[in-house]
Image (cartoon, rainbow, N blue to C red; front, side, top):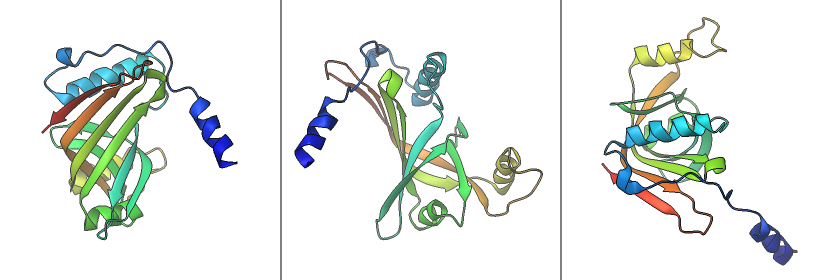
Amino acid sequence: MSDSFRRRLRALPDFPEDLPAFDPAGAPADPQQLFRDWLDEALAAGVRQPHAFSLATADAAGNLSSRMLILKNLDDSGWHFATARSSRKGRELAANPRAAMNFYWAEQGRQIRVAGAVVLLSDDASARDWAERPSAGGSANPDWQLYALQPVEIEFWQADPGRRHIRHRYDL
């Protein structure tokens, strides 16, 4: 049973043949600009939810968890996301304020990894983010927190059908 499942998994296709080209030598010096460029390309290609990412956190004991979130903004303070402070990820970030994001766009064979420290953004920014949620309905949520991941590393990865994948890393 296990051997047939392994063969089944190995037979699945990896990436489409017509992947976008990426030459790291032409990448901008600013990783945020490269992310914006890739996001524009993903949108133009019809990638669904290209702003969705997996956020990995760990509690004080180092126990890991991950979940899908939506990127809220990207600016000088970092890569923004939000959650309730009382949620599991909120508690983990309070105990261990480091995280990793991973964006994955299978249609383009691209992923972007972002890792670093996480800081709390202002109460005003958090309240504004809550108010902009479709489900907020004019309510307030004092438990809602807007965070910014401040990267120490960002890696852009472009798949290649011949398995000669391209990595371009920024150490910040």
